[in-house]
Image 1: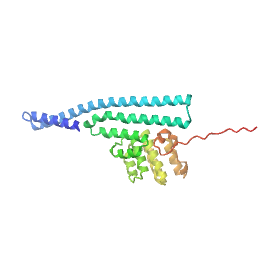
Image 2: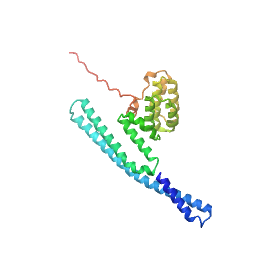
Image 3: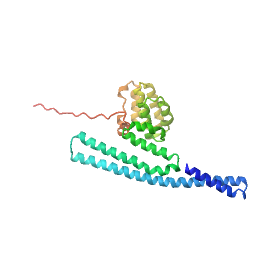
Image 4: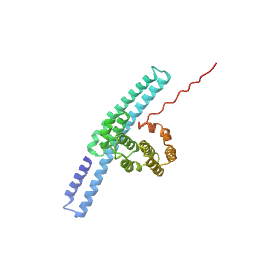
Length: 265
């Protein structure tokens, strides 16, 4: 965008001014150096500005989290209304907080013209917030304009491809998810293997979980692999991954059963 344009124009001006007094090879070297220096300086200034905006977003997110946590604590100590009503209040507050985060992303807009990747990066953040709000139609519209360099965005993309019966699901997983190592690889592999099991592709799920051993060592993935290899498909579960798994909204967490102690007289 403007960064490249300004760097190019500056280098051309330097070349035009020095062309008559220096050999062609020296002019080319000078133009290249000027281009790189100008590009680096502008990129550095953009990075500083971007960090400041990111810090503001982090502050806002912390403020929202603290407010919701405070409401939860008050409801636990001083319940008002039924559990269902209190949950609805918290959900509304969470939705409002996500709306604030999405609106705050507009702070990045002045930087779009300086970096052609900036808008795609912001789209990726916005897409994740919309996914949390369960606005899946908007998520699907935004996905082609996103970047998929982190585990969360890749996992969300996998979920939407699965829900939309996208035939490119396998190809996307192989080209994106396999790049992750350690803890970053867990959720993509967990989600993909779950999808394969749901599609009755148990052998493919075993192969995926076997491949996962090269990327990460995770007890849940390993246990699911052993269960599938032993034919215990119904026992396959990503539940031990807790919130990291349920945040993908492929499954609802099971409510604990309330045991009643019956006394006989």
